[in-house]
Image 1: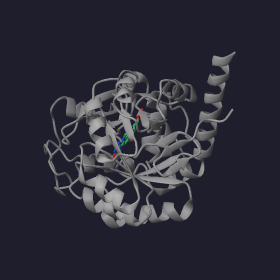
Image 2: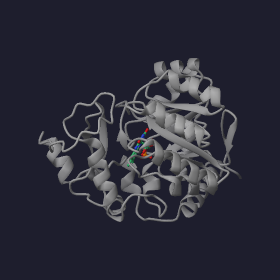
Image 3: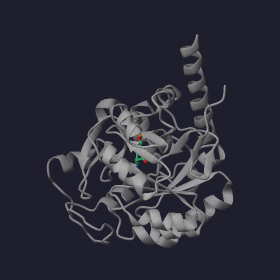
Length: 320
Ligand SMILES: Cc1cc2nc3c(=O)[nH]c(=O)nc-3n(C[C@H](O)[C@H](O)[C@H](O)COP(=O)(O)O)c2cc1C
């Protein structure tokens, strides 16, 4: 039995698996192109990159695969428009916009024949997105890694979003296995978006120390923390998150004015860059609750094969 395909507007991926965009420099062209080659939607995270750097990443991924390549940019980023336009110019198939809502992005995508997929946390915003021309929406629940737009679980949110819109709905947050994928597809999702599972891959651009934090993490190690973006973030506990919990914020050495609005408690970009480069003591290691289920670092092709096998086993088990 084959897994269903995922159609987002004019683009179809062989598998209903979207690899979530992960900033800063956690999901770049090596991860995205490997996922796209394996049949999923590979997503480069644009937040925290310069326009030139993002353009190079998209161009590299485009040269590496004919599969579906997406670019994720947080609406909260000051150069959101420039990053989205560079991604479009370099041939991205899909733009995924999170951490805020932009009306303009729908027009930029439509003009270029690119699919626009906002990340939503409520039926109200999903409806709005559909009205503006979204090709699909990602509904992300509270178990997801990174910044969170809701305190509700995806299993609770999904039925409401499905009721509210007619476009495909992609479920995210806490999905790590083929059995989880089956649960979401059975509930009506057109596909899933997974972030944490793909940190445990050889192609992911995080440092070995970052990946090792995932492999070692238990459920108790994964906590909510504060971000100057103004949203809570989910991360693996370390001396940095403990410091933040005490309200002891490290001074901002050099503000790059990367966000449209920033609480300025500390510099989120520097904190994410430090962990990506291997300093997992003073850096922020964003992770979903499913990081506790990441037990090894494998090639993307193997992860994708396993997800399909697990889905097939769960399907077989259900029909026996
Ligand atoms: C390290 C990390 C960085 C992330 N960065 C972003 C980001 O830049 N933009 C975004 O929309 N979502 C971001 N996310 C969320 C993922 O794209 C994805 O939706 C989420 O991880 C799904 O939950 P899961 O980790 O349980 O699979 C990030 C997640 C992680 C783990």
